[in-house]
Each structure stands twice: as structure tokens, then as C-alpha cells.
Image 1 (cartoon, one colour):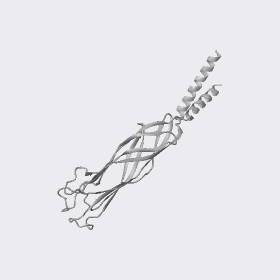
Image 2 (cartoon, one colour):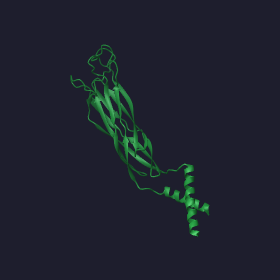
Image 3 (cartoon, rainbow, N blue to C red):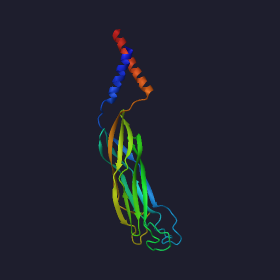
Image 4 (cartoon, helix red, strand yellow):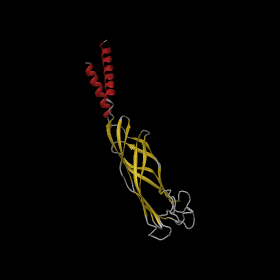
Length: 237
């Protein structure tokens, strides 16, 4: 009979773990990222503005952190905020020579970058969200865009169940601006462009109950069996 009680306790535990759970809303935090293009470099000797510093260190791209909430339930989907894109445009000197001749010594430059940031969901589960960007600097203007994707997966444990949250950053189209402002020196961080909110789509998949380690399961089953046996003995008394 003791084995029967152990089996009954184990069955009850597994049944409780497999029951559907109500949807919950959980919080997340996404970190920031920053890059400078072309970065702190030494201008060629005799290059235009090599003394006054115009053109260096170049554009500053910042992805500020984002916070929000998502619906953590099987099949849930939606749009989440992943921060704000900030862009400071500087006189990015592209040349390798000492003259202003374009395009021979002033070629267009293309910078490809990947911004990888850490995301934390309900203060415990963490993963990375990445997004690719393109910055093009020419004689007259600069252009910045962010691509869609790739999809990142974060695994979250909540109330004894495991969920997979798939996050896919959405694209930001090209923003093209003049990379100079008359004779005014660029401020630190470059000429600030309008902030652009960033978003991502997400979907949630319920992967089922979290199965404890074998020894933990055995202890739980034996404990339930012992309680059942104790109750049965008390009833016989």
C-alpha cells in the first residue's frame, strides 16, 4: 500500500505541474550600446581641419536602454519597446590625402556595425538582443539605418513553468542629414539628430513544467508517500 500512496502523491504532483496557468505580465530591461565612427584616429599630416579637430572622432551612435512589460503566456505576441536611437553627426573626415579633392582623396565610407545588448526579464532570466546597422558618410551628408532582426530567444522560468520568448528587432529606415553646419564647430558628440524610438516584435511559447532534478523529485515523492502512509495509519487507529 505504501507504493500506492507514493504513486498517488507523484501523480498528484505531476498533474499540478501540467495544469494551464493564467497569463501574467512581466517586466524586462534592455541595456544600452554606443559606437563611434570612425572613432578616435589621427588625421593624415596636413589634412584639412587636422589642427582644429573638425571631422574627428566622427559620428556617435547610441542605443539607449529600454524597459517595459510583456505578456508571458503561451502564444502571446506583441510589440515591445527596445529603447531609443540617438545619433550625433560630426564632420567625419574621410580622406587620406592633404587636399579637398573629391572623390580621389575623399571617398565615401560605409561602416557596418552590430549592436548587442543584454536583456533581463523579471530580474532573473537574461539573454542578448542584437541589431545590425549601417552608417554611410559622404562628402555632403551622412546616412544611418538599422536592419530588422535577427531573432533572439530568451528562456524564462516563472511559476514552475519554462517559457521561450523570441524577440525580433524591427528595422529603422534611413535617416539622411547634412554632415556640416556652416562654420560652427560640432559639439561633443556631434550635432544631435532627432531621437528615434526602437521596437521589436515578440512571441511567447510555453515549453511546459520545469522538471526538478531526479534526486529532488525522489525526495518529493517519498515525502508525499510518507504523508499518505501516516494518514492511512492514523485512520486505522
